[in-house]
Image 1 (spheres, one colour):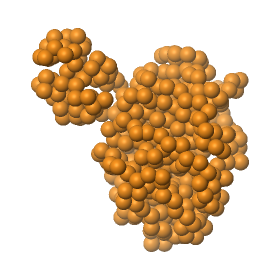
Image 2: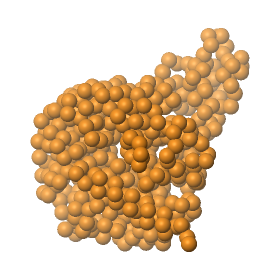
Image 3: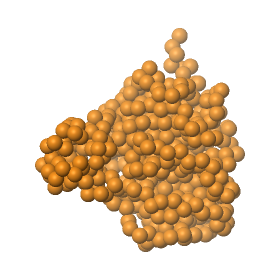
Length: 476
Protein backbone atom coordinates (compact mmCIF):
# COMPACT_ATOMS: atom_id res chain seq x y z
CA UNK A 1 0.00 0.00 0.00
CA UNK A 2 1.32 3.48 -0.87
CA UNK A 3 2.23 5.69 2.06
CA UNK A 4 1.53 8.84 0.08
CA UNK A 5 -2.25 9.07 0.77
CA UNK A 6 -1.66 8.32 4.45
CA UNK A 7 1.08 10.94 4.68
CA UNK A 8 -1.01 13.60 2.95
CA UNK A 9 -4.08 12.84 5.02
CA UNK A 10 -1.98 12.92 8.17
CA UNK A 11 -0.52 16.30 7.37
CA UNK A 12 -3.95 17.71 6.56
CA UNK A 13 -5.37 16.33 9.82
CA UNK A 14 -2.52 17.80 11.83
CA UNK A 15 -3.00 21.13 10.05
CA UNK A 16 -6.70 21.12 10.97
CA UNK A 17 -5.81 20.22 14.56
CA UNK A 18 -3.44 23.17 14.71
CA UNK A 19 -6.20 25.48 13.50
CA UNK A 20 -8.64 24.08 16.06
CA UNK A 21 -6.15 24.71 18.89
CA UNK A 22 -5.85 28.29 17.71
CA UNK A 23 -9.62 28.74 17.38
CA UNK A 24 -9.76 31.26 20.21
CA UNK A 25 -7.30 33.54 18.46
CA UNK A 26 -8.08 35.68 15.40
CA UNK A 27 -7.87 33.69 12.19
CA UNK A 28 -5.43 36.16 10.65
CA UNK A 29 -3.79 37.84 13.62
CA UNK A 30 -0.15 37.77 12.48
CA UNK A 31 1.94 37.89 9.31
CA UNK A 32 0.64 35.19 6.92
CA UNK A 33 -2.17 34.16 9.25
CA UNK A 34 -2.31 31.05 11.46
CA UNK A 35 1.25 30.22 12.54
CA UNK A 36 2.57 31.96 9.43
CA UNK A 37 1.09 29.24 7.21
CA UNK A 38 -0.74 31.48 4.76
CA UNK A 39 -3.81 29.24 5.08
CA UNK A 40 -7.17 30.45 6.39
CA UNK A 41 -10.40 28.84 7.61
CA UNK A 42 -12.37 31.63 5.92
CA UNK A 43 -15.25 30.65 3.63
CA UNK A 44 -17.18 32.29 0.80
CA UNK A 45 -14.03 33.78 -0.69
CA UNK A 46 -14.29 35.32 -4.18
CA UNK A 47 -13.07 33.52 -7.30
CA UNK A 48 -12.14 36.80 -8.97
CA UNK A 49 -10.51 39.92 -7.54
CA UNK A 50 -12.00 42.27 -10.09
CA UNK A 51 -11.46 45.95 -9.12
CA UNK A 52 -14.54 46.90 -11.16
CA UNK A 53 -17.07 44.47 -9.72
CA UNK A 54 -15.70 42.72 -6.61
CA UNK A 55 -14.54 45.57 -4.34
CA UNK A 56 -16.57 45.72 -1.12
CA UNK A 57 -14.66 48.82 -0.05
CA UNK A 58 -11.44 50.75 -0.67
CA UNK A 59 -9.76 52.93 1.95
CA UNK A 60 -6.80 55.20 1.27
CA UNK A 61 -3.92 54.64 3.70
CA UNK A 62 -0.32 55.94 3.88
CA UNK A 63 2.34 53.78 2.18
CA UNK A 64 4.12 50.81 3.74
CA UNK A 65 4.96 47.15 3.21
CA UNK A 66 3.11 45.93 6.30
CA UNK A 67 0.51 43.27 5.57
CA UNK A 68 -2.99 43.66 7.03
CA UNK A 69 -4.10 41.56 10.00
CA UNK A 70 -7.55 41.45 11.58
CA UNK A 71 -9.73 40.30 14.41
CA UNK A 72 -13.48 39.75 14.02
CA UNK A 73 -14.21 43.45 13.54
CA UNK A 74 -11.03 45.41 12.81
CA UNK A 75 -8.14 45.45 10.37
CA UNK A 76 -4.73 46.68 11.53
CA UNK A 77 -1.72 47.73 9.49
CA UNK A 78 1.46 49.78 9.85
CA UNK A 79 2.27 52.70 7.58
CA UNK A 80 4.58 55.69 7.29
CA UNK A 81 3.14 59.14 6.64
CA UNK A 82 6.18 61.11 5.55
CA UNK A 83 8.62 60.67 8.42
CA UNK A 84 5.96 59.61 10.92
CA UNK A 85 5.33 55.88 11.44
CA UNK A 86 1.66 55.23 12.21
CA UNK A 87 -0.63 52.34 13.14
CA UNK A 88 -3.98 52.38 11.35
CA UNK A 89 -7.17 50.57 12.41
CA UNK A 90 -9.91 50.07 9.81
CA UNK A 91 -13.44 48.72 10.23
CA UNK A 92 -13.54 45.27 8.62
CA UNK A 93 -17.18 45.63 7.56
CA UNK A 94 -17.13 49.14 6.08
CA UNK A 95 -13.52 50.19 5.50
CA UNK A 96 -13.93 53.27 7.71
CA UNK A 97 -10.77 54.34 9.57
CA UNK A 98 -11.55 53.84 13.25
CA UNK A 99 -8.31 55.26 14.62
CA UNK A 100 -4.75 56.15 13.72
CA UNK A 101 -1.87 56.39 16.20
CA UNK A 102 1.56 57.90 15.66
CA UNK A 103 4.65 56.01 16.85
CA UNK A 104 6.60 57.58 19.73
CA UNK A 105 9.38 58.86 17.46
CA UNK A 106 9.71 59.95 13.84
CA UNK A 107 12.26 58.62 11.38
CA UNK A 108 15.81 59.93 11.42
CA UNK A 109 16.69 58.22 8.13
CA UNK A 110 15.07 55.97 5.54
CA UNK A 111 16.27 52.38 5.05
CA UNK A 112 18.75 51.72 2.28
CA UNK A 113 17.48 50.07 -0.90
CA UNK A 114 13.90 49.01 -1.45
CA UNK A 115 12.75 48.50 2.13
CA UNK A 116 10.12 50.58 3.93
CA UNK A 117 10.13 52.05 7.46
CA UNK A 118 6.77 50.27 7.84
CA UNK A 119 7.73 46.75 6.77
CA UNK A 120 6.72 44.97 9.95
CA UNK A 121 3.21 43.50 10.10
CA UNK A 122 1.28 44.03 13.37
CA UNK A 123 0.05 41.16 15.53
CA UNK A 124 -3.29 40.99 17.32
CA UNK A 125 -4.90 38.53 19.72
CA UNK A 126 -8.33 40.18 19.56
CA UNK A 127 -7.73 42.25 22.70
CA UNK A 128 -4.63 44.19 21.74
CA UNK A 129 -2.50 44.98 18.72
CA UNK A 130 1.31 45.06 18.86
CA UNK A 131 3.31 46.88 16.21
CA UNK A 132 7.06 47.13 15.61
CA UNK A 133 8.86 50.07 14.03
CA UNK A 134 12.63 49.89 13.94
CA UNK A 135 12.80 53.63 14.66
CA UNK A 136 11.30 53.19 18.14
CA UNK A 137 10.62 49.55 19.03
CA UNK A 138 7.38 47.81 20.08
CA UNK A 139 4.11 49.49 20.99
CA UNK A 140 0.88 47.86 22.17
CA UNK A 141 -2.62 49.35 21.86
CA UNK A 142 -6.01 48.09 22.90
CA UNK A 143 -8.53 47.60 20.11
CA UNK A 144 -9.79 51.16 20.63
CA UNK A 145 -6.33 52.63 20.09
CA UNK A 146 -5.35 53.38 23.69
CA UNK A 147 -1.67 52.87 24.45
CA UNK A 148 -1.08 49.87 26.73
CA UNK A 149 2.71 49.91 26.80
CA UNK A 150 5.82 50.79 24.84
CA UNK A 151 9.12 48.91 24.75
CA UNK A 152 11.94 50.90 23.09
CA UNK A 153 14.38 48.96 20.90
CA UNK A 154 17.25 49.85 18.60
CA UNK A 155 19.00 51.39 16.91
CA UNK A 156 19.62 48.35 14.71
CA UNK A 157 22.66 47.69 12.57
CA UNK A 158 21.35 46.42 9.26
CA UNK A 159 21.99 47.69 5.73
CA UNK A 160 18.40 47.47 4.49
CA UNK A 161 16.33 48.12 7.61
CA UNK A 162 14.27 45.59 9.55
CA UNK A 163 11.56 43.38 8.08
CA UNK A 164 10.58 40.93 10.83
CA UNK A 165 7.13 41.00 12.48
CA UNK A 166 6.03 40.39 16.08
CA UNK A 167 4.12 37.27 17.10
CA UNK A 168 1.69 36.96 20.03
CA UNK A 169 1.75 33.50 21.58
CA UNK A 170 -0.01 32.85 24.87
CA UNK A 171 1.05 35.63 27.26
CA UNK A 172 4.15 36.49 25.25
CA UNK A 173 5.05 38.87 22.45
CA UNK A 174 7.92 37.41 20.43
CA UNK A 175 10.24 39.41 18.18
CA UNK A 176 13.25 38.25 16.19
CA UNK A 177 15.89 40.97 15.86
CA UNK A 178 18.59 39.69 13.52
CA UNK A 179 21.16 42.34 12.60
CA UNK A 180 24.86 42.68 11.84
CA UNK A 181 26.06 42.15 15.39
CA UNK A 182 24.12 41.60 18.63
CA UNK A 183 21.24 39.64 17.09
CA UNK A 184 18.66 38.32 19.56
CA UNK A 185 15.25 36.72 20.05
CA UNK A 186 13.06 38.61 22.50
CA UNK A 187 10.01 37.65 24.57
CA UNK A 188 7.91 40.29 26.35
CA UNK A 189 4.90 40.03 28.62
CA UNK A 190 1.99 40.92 26.36
CA UNK A 191 0.10 42.60 29.22
CA UNK A 192 2.89 44.90 30.45
CA UNK A 193 5.66 44.93 27.82
CA UNK A 194 8.19 43.76 30.43
CA UNK A 195 11.01 41.53 29.24
CA UNK A 196 10.49 37.84 30.04
CA UNK A 197 13.65 36.60 28.37
CA UNK A 198 16.16 37.58 25.69
CA UNK A 199 18.38 35.06 23.88
CA UNK A 200 21.49 36.15 22.00
CA UNK A 201 22.02 34.85 18.45
CA UNK A 202 25.74 35.54 17.85
CA UNK A 203 25.83 33.42 14.68
CA UNK A 204 23.10 35.47 12.95
CA UNK A 205 23.51 38.50 10.71
CA UNK A 206 20.78 40.67 9.27
CA UNK A 207 17.66 38.87 8.09
CA UNK A 208 13.95 39.42 7.60
CA UNK A 209 12.16 36.22 8.59
CA UNK A 210 9.37 35.93 11.17
CA UNK A 211 9.28 32.95 13.59
CA UNK A 212 6.66 30.22 13.83
CA UNK A 213 5.65 27.90 16.70
CA UNK A 214 6.27 24.15 16.86
CA UNK A 215 4.55 22.04 19.51
CA UNK A 216 6.13 18.58 19.88
CA UNK A 217 3.83 15.84 21.09
CA UNK A 218 5.78 15.19 24.28
CA UNK A 219 7.83 18.32 24.84
CA UNK A 220 7.34 22.01 25.47
CA UNK A 221 6.50 24.44 22.68
CA UNK A 222 9.37 25.78 20.57
CA UNK A 223 9.98 28.89 18.49
CA UNK A 224 11.40 28.06 15.06
CA UNK A 225 13.61 30.75 13.54
CA UNK A 226 15.09 30.89 10.04
CA UNK A 227 18.35 32.86 10.10
CA UNK A 228 21.80 33.24 8.59
CA UNK A 229 23.18 29.84 7.54
CA UNK A 230 20.97 28.07 10.11
CA UNK A 231 17.43 27.26 11.23
CA UNK A 232 17.09 27.13 15.03
CA UNK A 233 14.41 26.26 17.59
CA UNK A 234 14.16 27.81 21.06
CA UNK A 235 12.11 26.98 24.13
CA UNK A 236 9.00 29.17 24.28
CA UNK A 237 9.14 29.32 28.08
CA UNK A 238 12.82 30.15 28.56
CA UNK A 239 14.43 30.99 25.21
CA UNK A 240 16.93 28.14 25.59
CA UNK A 241 18.15 26.68 22.31
CA UNK A 242 16.60 23.27 21.61
CA UNK A 243 17.98 22.26 18.20
CA UNK A 244 19.52 23.71 15.06
CA UNK A 245 20.35 22.74 11.50
CA UNK A 246 23.11 24.31 9.40
CA UNK A 247 23.23 24.58 5.63
CA UNK A 248 20.88 27.50 4.94
CA UNK A 249 21.54 30.56 2.77
CA UNK A 250 23.42 33.52 4.23
CA UNK A 251 20.33 35.72 4.41
CA UNK A 252 16.86 34.62 5.56
CA UNK A 253 13.67 36.31 4.37
CA UNK A 254 10.88 33.75 4.25
CA UNK A 255 8.70 32.16 6.92
CA UNK A 256 9.14 28.41 7.57
CA UNK A 257 6.06 26.23 7.07
CA UNK A 258 5.21 23.49 9.54
CA UNK A 259 2.93 20.48 9.13
CA UNK A 260 3.00 17.79 11.75
CA UNK A 261 6.59 16.79 12.45
CA UNK A 262 7.84 18.03 9.10
CA UNK A 263 9.30 21.51 8.58
CA UNK A 264 9.63 23.13 5.17
CA UNK A 265 12.24 25.87 5.43
CA UNK A 266 13.44 27.96 2.50
CA UNK A 267 16.17 30.58 2.21
CA UNK A 268 17.65 32.26 -0.84
CA UNK A 269 20.14 35.04 -1.35
CA UNK A 270 22.18 36.01 -4.37
CA UNK A 271 25.84 35.00 -4.11
CA UNK A 272 28.42 37.79 -3.77
CA UNK A 273 29.56 37.15 -7.34
CA UNK A 274 25.98 37.58 -8.61
CA UNK A 275 25.86 40.93 -6.82
CA UNK A 276 29.01 42.04 -8.61
CA UNK A 277 31.52 41.18 -5.86
CA UNK A 278 34.02 38.37 -6.55
CA UNK A 279 33.81 35.43 -4.16
CA UNK A 280 36.45 35.62 -1.44
CA UNK A 281 38.43 32.41 -1.01
CA UNK A 282 41.65 33.57 0.67
CA UNK A 283 41.96 32.95 4.44
CA UNK A 284 42.30 36.08 6.56
CA UNK A 285 45.98 35.57 7.47
CA UNK A 286 46.92 35.20 3.80
CA UNK A 287 44.83 38.25 2.91
CA UNK A 288 46.69 40.30 5.53
CA UNK A 289 50.05 39.28 4.05
CA UNK A 290 48.89 40.26 0.58
CA UNK A 291 46.81 43.40 1.11
CA UNK A 292 47.49 44.89 4.57
CA UNK A 293 49.89 47.59 3.40
CA UNK A 294 49.94 49.57 6.64
CA UNK A 295 50.20 46.49 8.85
CA UNK A 296 47.33 47.45 11.15
CA UNK A 297 45.80 43.98 11.14
CA UNK A 298 42.64 44.95 9.25
CA UNK A 299 41.82 45.48 5.58
CA UNK A 300 40.53 48.81 4.30
CA UNK A 301 38.56 49.43 1.12
CA UNK A 302 41.63 50.97 -0.51
CA UNK A 303 43.83 48.01 0.39
CA UNK A 304 41.35 45.53 -1.08
CA UNK A 305 40.45 47.64 -4.11
CA UNK A 306 41.46 45.00 -6.65
CA UNK A 307 39.01 42.53 -5.07
CA UNK A 308 36.01 44.70 -5.96
CA UNK A 309 34.60 44.78 -2.43
CA UNK A 310 33.87 48.51 -2.68
CA UNK A 311 30.85 47.73 -4.91
CA UNK A 312 28.91 46.57 -1.84
CA UNK A 313 31.23 47.67 0.93
CA UNK A 314 28.34 48.18 3.35
CA UNK A 315 27.61 44.44 3.19
CA UNK A 316 31.19 43.64 4.17
CA UNK A 317 32.05 46.35 6.71
CA UNK A 318 29.33 45.45 9.19
CA UNK A 319 30.49 47.68 12.04
CA UNK A 320 31.10 50.61 9.64
CA UNK A 321 34.63 51.02 10.92
CA UNK A 322 36.09 51.54 7.45
CA UNK A 323 38.03 48.27 7.54
CA UNK A 324 37.41 44.52 7.69
CA UNK A 325 38.48 42.48 10.70
CA UNK A 326 38.79 38.70 10.92
CA UNK A 327 35.11 38.10 11.76
CA UNK A 328 33.90 40.21 8.84
CA UNK A 329 36.33 38.53 6.47
CA UNK A 330 35.32 35.05 7.64
CA UNK A 331 31.69 36.00 7.01
CA UNK A 332 32.59 36.88 3.41
CA UNK A 333 34.18 33.44 3.08
CA UNK A 334 31.06 31.77 4.48
CA UNK A 335 28.74 33.70 2.18
CA UNK A 336 30.74 32.54 -0.82
CA UNK A 337 30.17 28.86 -0.07
CA UNK A 338 26.65 29.00 1.38
CA UNK A 339 23.87 27.40 -0.66
CA UNK A 340 20.28 28.34 -1.28
CA UNK A 341 17.67 25.69 -0.71
CA UNK A 342 14.19 24.52 0.15
CA UNK A 343 14.57 21.83 2.82
CA UNK A 344 12.16 19.29 4.26
CA UNK A 345 13.31 18.57 7.82
CA UNK A 346 12.06 15.75 10.04
CA UNK A 347 11.61 17.20 13.52
CA UNK A 348 11.91 15.53 16.88
CA UNK A 349 15.65 15.68 17.38
CA UNK A 350 17.70 17.68 19.90
CA UNK A 351 20.93 19.58 19.56
CA UNK A 352 22.71 19.70 16.21
CA UNK A 353 20.62 18.10 13.47
CA UNK A 354 22.36 16.63 10.44
CA UNK A 355 21.88 15.13 7.00
CA UNK A 356 19.81 12.22 8.32
CA UNK A 357 17.21 14.75 9.49
CA UNK A 358 16.93 16.34 6.04
CA UNK A 359 14.36 14.33 4.09
CA UNK A 360 14.95 16.16 0.83
CA UNK A 361 16.12 19.49 -0.54
CA UNK A 362 15.59 21.50 -3.71
CA UNK A 363 18.19 24.03 -4.81
CA UNK A 364 16.92 25.34 -8.16
CA UNK A 365 14.09 27.63 -9.30
CA UNK A 366 13.59 29.05 -5.81
CA UNK A 367 11.89 32.32 -4.80
CA UNK A 368 13.72 35.27 -3.30
CA UNK A 369 11.11 36.74 -0.93
CA UNK A 370 7.75 34.86 -1.15
CA UNK A 371 7.36 32.14 1.50
CA UNK A 372 6.33 28.55 0.73
CA UNK A 373 2.70 27.47 1.07
CA UNK A 374 1.43 24.02 2.11
CA UNK A 375 -2.20 23.53 1.12
CA UNK A 376 -4.38 20.47 0.65
CA UNK A 377 -1.44 18.09 0.81
CA UNK A 378 0.84 19.90 -1.67
CA UNK A 379 3.69 22.38 -1.33
CA UNK A 380 3.77 25.56 -3.46
CA UNK A 381 6.50 28.10 -4.15
CA UNK A 382 6.19 31.30 -6.18
CA UNK A 383 9.17 33.04 -7.76
CA UNK A 384 9.98 35.98 -9.98
CA UNK A 385 8.32 35.91 -13.36
CA UNK A 386 5.13 34.54 -11.83
CA UNK A 387 6.40 30.94 -11.87
CA UNK A 388 4.24 28.83 -9.57
CA UNK A 389 5.72 25.44 -8.71
CA UNK A 390 3.91 22.65 -6.88
CA UNK A 391 6.00 19.95 -5.20
CA UNK A 392 5.27 16.60 -3.65
CA UNK A 393 5.94 17.09 0.10
CA UNK A 394 7.07 13.47 0.41
CA UNK A 395 10.12 13.69 -1.81
CA UNK A 396 10.33 17.23 -3.21
CA UNK A 397 9.51 16.10 -6.73
CA UNK A 398 8.21 18.89 -8.98
CA UNK A 399 4.67 18.02 -10.05
CA UNK A 400 3.99 21.18 -12.05
CA UNK A 401 5.84 24.42 -12.76
CA UNK A 402 4.42 27.11 -15.01
CA UNK A 403 3.94 30.84 -15.24
CA UNK A 404 0.69 32.34 -14.04
CA UNK A 405 -0.63 33.45 -17.39
CA UNK A 406 -1.61 37.11 -17.26
CA UNK A 407 0.40 37.72 -14.07
CA UNK A 408 4.01 37.40 -15.25
CA UNK A 409 5.74 39.85 -12.94
CA UNK A 410 8.03 40.29 -9.92
CA UNK A 411 6.59 38.99 -6.65
CA UNK A 412 7.23 40.21 -3.12
CA UNK A 413 3.91 39.08 -1.61
CA UNK A 414 3.64 35.44 -0.56
CA UNK A 415 0.88 33.17 -1.89
CA UNK A 416 -2.02 32.47 0.46
CA UNK A 417 -4.91 30.00 0.38
CA UNK A 418 -8.40 29.35 1.69
CA UNK A 419 -11.82 28.06 0.66
CA UNK A 420 -10.26 25.85 -2.01
CA UNK A 421 -8.42 28.69 -3.75
CA UNK A 422 -4.89 30.12 -3.97
CA UNK A 423 -4.34 33.89 -4.16
CA UNK A 424 -1.28 35.71 -5.49
CA UNK A 425 -0.51 39.43 -5.80
CA UNK A 426 2.28 40.70 -8.04
CA UNK A 427 4.38 43.82 -7.55
CA UNK A 428 2.54 45.74 -10.26
CA UNK A 429 -0.83 44.79 -8.89
CA UNK A 430 -1.88 41.75 -10.86
CA UNK A 431 -4.20 39.66 -8.72
CA UNK A 432 -4.60 35.97 -9.58
CA UNK A 433 -6.97 33.35 -8.19
CA UNK A 434 -5.84 29.78 -8.77
CA UNK A 435 -7.54 26.41 -8.58
CA UNK A 436 -4.94 24.40 -6.60
CA UNK A 437 -3.64 20.93 -7.32
CA UNK A 438 -0.84 19.05 -9.02
CA UNK A 439 -2.24 20.38 -12.30
CA UNK A 440 -3.29 23.80 -10.97
CA UNK A 441 -5.09 26.22 -13.24
CA UNK A 442 -5.81 29.94 -13.27
CA UNK A 443 -9.38 30.92 -12.41
CA UNK A 444 -8.94 34.66 -12.92
CA UNK A 445 -6.39 37.46 -13.23
CA UNK A 446 -7.17 41.16 -12.79
CA UNK A 447 -4.91 44.20 -12.88
CA UNK A 448 -5.34 46.51 -9.93
CA UNK A 449 -2.87 49.00 -11.36
CA UNK A 450 -1.24 49.77 -7.99
CA UNK A 451 2.07 48.68 -6.49
CA UNK A 452 1.94 45.81 -4.00
CA UNK A 453 4.63 44.76 -1.54
CA UNK A 454 2.37 43.36 1.20
CA UNK A 455 1.01 39.84 1.44
CA UNK A 456 -2.82 39.80 1.31
CA UNK A 457 -4.95 38.55 4.20
CA UNK A 458 -8.11 36.46 4.29
CA UNK A 459 -11.27 37.00 6.33
CA UNK A 460 -14.74 35.50 6.12
CA UNK A 461 -15.99 36.43 2.64
CA UNK A 462 -13.12 38.89 2.17
CA UNK A 463 -9.70 39.09 0.57
CA UNK A 464 -7.76 42.07 1.99
CA UNK A 465 -5.17 43.56 -0.37
CA UNK A 466 -2.87 46.35 0.72
CA UNK A 467 -1.25 48.51 -1.98
CA UNK A 468 0.98 51.55 -1.59
CA UNK A 469 -2.10 53.74 -1.89
CA UNK A 470 -4.96 51.89 -0.27
CA UNK A 471 -6.42 48.92 1.54
CA UNK A 472 -8.96 46.93 -0.49
CA UNK A 473 -11.57 44.44 0.64
CA UNK A 474 -12.66 42.12 -2.17
CA UNK A 475 -15.85 40.14 -1.78
CA UNK A 476 -19.60 40.52 -1.97
